[in-house]
Image 1 (cartoon, rainbow, N blue to C red):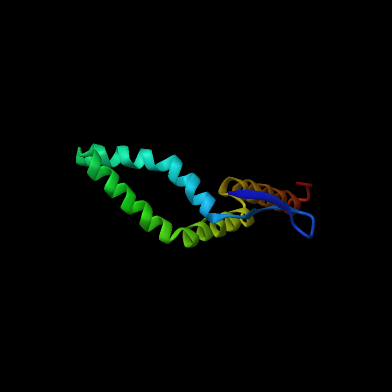
Image 2: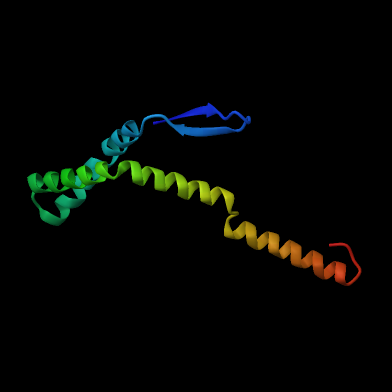
Amino acid sequence: MSEWVRHPVGSTVAAVIDDDAGYTAFFRDQFPRVVRTVYLILRDHARAEDVAQDAFVRLYRDWDRIAGSVRRTVGGSCSVPSRPLRQAAAARTSTGLIARARGRRG
């Protein structure tokens, strides 16, 4: 799970304290859903549980890499404004430039 900690500079950041706890929470939430999905495909509950367990074992082996990838993706997304924000900023900037070029304030 995550715990909120104070960054030395003063900003609040989320620090992942225990990735195993994160995996456990994910497993508890998703395993029943995955079993149901596989059951709908195979129509065999025992096989559905086996397939789901195998998938979660493979996921657990890569959990640190996946969790790190998610954190990097989120960090990158935070540093780049979303498309609507970029478009609005570009519209304001171009409107302001056109107005200034015409001698008006934008």
